[in-house]
Image (cartoon, rainbow, N blue to C red; front, side):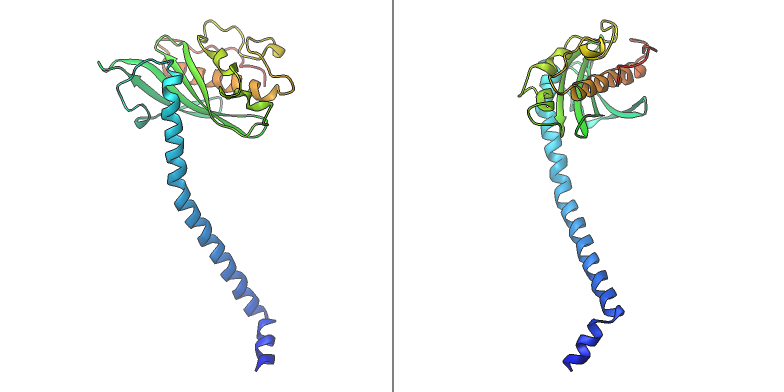
Length: 211
Protein backbone atom coordinates (compact mmCIF):
# COMPACT_ATOMS: atom_id res chain seq x y z
CA UNK A 1 0.00 0.00 0.00
CA UNK A 2 2.82 2.39 0.91
CA UNK A 3 4.52 1.59 -2.35
CA UNK A 4 1.37 2.58 -4.24
CA UNK A 5 1.12 5.87 -2.36
CA UNK A 6 4.77 6.68 -2.94
CA UNK A 7 4.36 5.89 -6.65
CA UNK A 8 1.30 8.17 -6.81
CA UNK A 9 3.19 10.98 -5.08
CA UNK A 10 5.93 10.72 -7.70
CA UNK A 11 3.40 11.21 -10.49
CA UNK A 12 2.83 14.50 -12.31
CA UNK A 13 -0.89 14.80 -11.31
CA UNK A 14 -0.03 14.68 -7.60
CA UNK A 15 2.81 17.18 -7.92
CA UNK A 16 0.66 19.51 -10.04
CA UNK A 17 -2.14 19.34 -7.49
CA UNK A 18 0.30 19.99 -4.64
CA UNK A 19 1.85 22.98 -6.42
CA UNK A 20 -1.60 24.40 -7.24
CA UNK A 21 -2.66 24.00 -3.62
CA UNK A 22 0.45 25.80 -2.33
CA UNK A 23 -0.05 28.65 -4.81
CA UNK A 24 -3.70 28.91 -3.84
CA UNK A 25 -2.90 29.12 -0.13
CA UNK A 26 -0.16 31.70 -0.77
CA UNK A 27 -2.50 33.83 -2.88
CA UNK A 28 -5.21 33.61 -0.23
CA UNK A 29 -2.76 34.68 2.47
CA UNK A 30 -1.61 37.64 0.36
CA UNK A 31 -5.19 38.76 -0.24
CA UNK A 32 -6.01 38.38 3.44
CA UNK A 33 -2.91 40.33 4.48
CA UNK A 34 -3.70 43.06 1.96
CA UNK A 35 -7.32 43.35 3.12
CA UNK A 36 -6.20 43.57 6.75
CA UNK A 37 -3.35 46.05 6.29
CA UNK A 38 -4.78 48.31 3.56
CA UNK A 39 -7.25 50.13 5.85
CA UNK A 40 -4.58 50.46 8.54
CA UNK A 41 -2.08 51.92 6.05
CA UNK A 42 -4.72 54.35 4.74
CA UNK A 43 -5.60 55.37 8.30
CA UNK A 44 -1.95 55.91 9.20
CA UNK A 45 -1.41 58.01 6.07
CA UNK A 46 -4.47 60.10 6.91
CA UNK A 47 -3.23 60.59 10.47
CA UNK A 48 0.20 61.65 9.21
CA UNK A 49 -1.37 64.08 6.75
CA UNK A 50 -3.62 65.63 9.37
CA UNK A 51 -0.69 65.96 11.74
CA UNK A 52 1.32 67.78 9.07
CA UNK A 53 -1.53 69.92 7.76
CA UNK A 54 -1.08 72.72 10.29
CA UNK A 55 2.66 72.68 9.57
CA UNK A 56 2.33 73.09 5.78
CA UNK A 57 -0.23 75.85 6.40
CA UNK A 58 2.28 77.50 8.75
CA UNK A 59 -0.34 77.65 11.48
CA UNK A 60 -3.08 79.26 9.37
CA UNK A 61 -6.55 78.24 10.66
CA UNK A 62 -8.93 76.18 8.54
CA UNK A 63 -12.58 75.25 8.94
CA UNK A 64 -13.18 72.49 6.36
CA UNK A 65 -12.23 68.82 6.17
CA UNK A 66 -9.32 69.49 3.87
CA UNK A 67 -8.59 65.95 2.69
CA UNK A 68 -12.21 65.01 2.02
CA UNK A 69 -12.35 66.71 -1.39
CA UNK A 70 -9.47 65.96 -3.74
CA UNK A 71 -9.05 67.43 -7.20
CA UNK A 72 -6.78 65.54 -9.58
CA UNK A 73 -3.96 67.42 -11.29
CA UNK A 74 -1.50 66.38 -14.01
CA UNK A 75 1.76 68.01 -14.97
CA UNK A 76 4.83 66.78 -16.88
CA UNK A 77 3.59 63.20 -16.67
CA UNK A 78 3.12 63.31 -12.90
CA UNK A 79 -0.08 63.04 -10.94
CA UNK A 80 -1.03 65.26 -7.98
CA UNK A 81 -4.00 65.75 -5.68
CA UNK A 82 -5.12 69.26 -4.75
CA UNK A 83 -7.20 70.14 -1.68
CA UNK A 84 -8.70 73.60 -1.11
CA UNK A 85 -8.39 75.01 2.40
CA UNK A 86 -11.24 77.25 3.58
CA UNK A 87 -11.74 79.55 6.53
CA UNK A 88 -14.90 79.85 8.65
CA UNK A 89 -16.46 82.15 6.03
CA UNK A 90 -15.98 79.53 3.30
CA UNK A 91 -13.25 81.48 1.54
CA UNK A 92 -10.35 79.52 0.08
CA UNK A 93 -7.21 80.77 1.81
CA UNK A 94 -4.73 78.06 0.82
CA UNK A 95 -4.28 74.99 -1.35
CA UNK A 96 -2.64 71.79 -0.22
CA UNK A 97 -1.07 69.57 -2.87
CA UNK A 98 -0.04 65.96 -2.31
CA UNK A 99 2.49 64.49 -4.72
CA UNK A 100 5.41 62.15 -5.17
CA UNK A 101 8.85 62.42 -6.74
CA UNK A 102 11.52 59.83 -7.42
CA UNK A 103 14.50 60.05 -5.11
CA UNK A 104 17.62 57.93 -4.71
CA UNK A 105 15.90 55.11 -2.83
CA UNK A 106 12.45 55.25 -4.45
CA UNK A 107 9.34 57.39 -4.26
CA UNK A 108 9.26 60.39 -1.96
CA UNK A 109 5.75 61.46 -0.94
CA UNK A 110 5.31 65.08 0.10
CA UNK A 111 2.67 67.59 1.15
CA UNK A 112 2.80 71.19 -0.09
CA UNK A 113 0.90 74.18 1.31
CA UNK A 114 0.41 77.28 -0.88
CA UNK A 115 -1.46 80.45 0.03
CA UNK A 116 -3.94 82.19 -2.27
CA UNK A 117 -1.13 84.43 -3.58
CA UNK A 118 0.82 81.44 -4.85
CA UNK A 119 3.44 81.56 -2.09
CA UNK A 120 4.56 78.36 -0.34
CA UNK A 121 3.58 78.26 3.33
CA UNK A 122 5.20 74.90 4.02
CA UNK A 123 6.45 71.58 2.64
CA UNK A 124 6.69 68.32 4.58
CA UNK A 125 7.73 64.80 3.66
CA UNK A 126 5.06 62.12 4.16
CA UNK A 127 7.19 59.08 3.37
CA UNK A 128 10.47 58.12 1.72
CA UNK A 129 13.12 55.40 1.46
CA UNK A 130 16.21 57.59 1.25
CA UNK A 131 19.53 56.67 2.83
CA UNK A 132 19.55 57.15 6.63
CA UNK A 133 22.06 59.77 7.68
CA UNK A 134 22.25 61.29 4.17
CA UNK A 135 19.01 61.56 2.21
CA UNK A 136 16.77 61.53 5.26
CA UNK A 137 17.70 65.14 5.96
CA UNK A 138 14.59 66.02 3.96
CA UNK A 139 12.70 65.22 7.19
CA UNK A 140 12.19 68.18 9.50
CA UNK A 141 13.10 65.92 12.41
CA UNK A 142 16.58 65.49 10.90
CA UNK A 143 17.33 68.97 9.51
CA UNK A 144 15.79 72.39 8.79
CA UNK A 145 16.35 72.01 5.04
CA UNK A 146 12.68 71.46 4.14
CA UNK A 147 11.88 74.91 5.62
CA UNK A 148 13.92 76.54 2.84
CA UNK A 149 10.86 76.23 0.57
CA UNK A 150 8.87 78.68 2.73
CA UNK A 151 7.97 81.93 0.96
CA UNK A 152 9.10 80.67 -2.44
CA UNK A 153 6.80 81.06 -5.42
CA UNK A 154 7.04 80.61 -9.18
CA UNK A 155 7.45 84.36 -9.47
CA UNK A 156 10.20 84.94 -6.93
CA UNK A 157 12.35 81.87 -7.69
CA UNK A 158 14.50 82.22 -10.79
CA UNK A 159 15.74 78.63 -10.96
CA UNK A 160 14.21 75.72 -9.06
CA UNK A 161 17.33 73.70 -8.48
CA UNK A 162 19.96 73.00 -5.84
CA UNK A 163 22.90 75.40 -5.61
CA UNK A 164 25.19 72.82 -7.22
CA UNK A 165 23.01 73.23 -10.34
CA UNK A 166 22.89 77.02 -10.03
CA UNK A 167 19.62 77.17 -8.11
CA UNK A 168 18.45 78.52 -4.78
CA UNK A 169 18.33 75.41 -2.59
CA UNK A 170 21.14 73.77 -0.62
CA UNK A 171 22.17 70.21 -1.38
CA UNK A 172 23.42 67.70 1.20
CA UNK A 173 27.05 66.64 1.43
CA UNK A 174 27.22 63.23 -0.23
CA UNK A 175 23.53 63.18 -1.18
CA UNK A 176 22.64 65.56 -3.99
CA UNK A 177 20.08 63.31 -5.69
CA UNK A 178 17.56 63.45 -2.85
CA UNK A 179 17.31 67.25 -2.41
CA UNK A 180 17.40 67.65 -6.19
CA UNK A 181 14.42 65.27 -6.48
CA UNK A 182 12.43 67.10 -3.81
CA UNK A 183 13.11 70.52 -5.37
CA UNK A 184 12.05 69.16 -8.74
CA UNK A 185 8.93 67.53 -7.27
CA UNK A 186 7.83 70.66 -5.43
CA UNK A 187 8.47 72.77 -8.52
CA UNK A 188 6.31 70.50 -10.67
CA UNK A 189 3.59 70.46 -8.00
CA UNK A 190 3.61 74.28 -7.98
CA UNK A 191 3.31 74.34 -11.75
CA UNK A 192 0.48 71.79 -11.64
CA UNK A 193 -1.38 73.95 -9.13
CA UNK A 194 -0.87 77.23 -10.97
CA UNK A 195 -1.85 75.59 -14.24
CA UNK A 196 -5.16 74.89 -12.53
CA UNK A 197 -5.40 78.52 -11.41
CA UNK A 198 -4.16 80.36 -14.52
CA UNK A 199 -6.17 83.46 -13.71
CA UNK A 200 -4.04 84.02 -10.64
CA UNK A 201 -0.59 82.79 -11.59
CA UNK A 202 0.29 81.78 -15.18
CA UNK A 203 2.56 78.77 -15.37
CA UNK A 204 6.06 79.55 -16.56
CA UNK A 205 7.06 77.89 -19.81
CA UNK A 206 10.73 77.62 -18.98
CA UNK A 207 12.38 74.28 -18.55
CA UNK A 208 12.11 72.76 -15.12
CA UNK A 209 14.85 72.25 -12.55
CA UNK A 210 17.77 70.11 -13.68
CA UNK A 211 17.22 66.40 -13.09
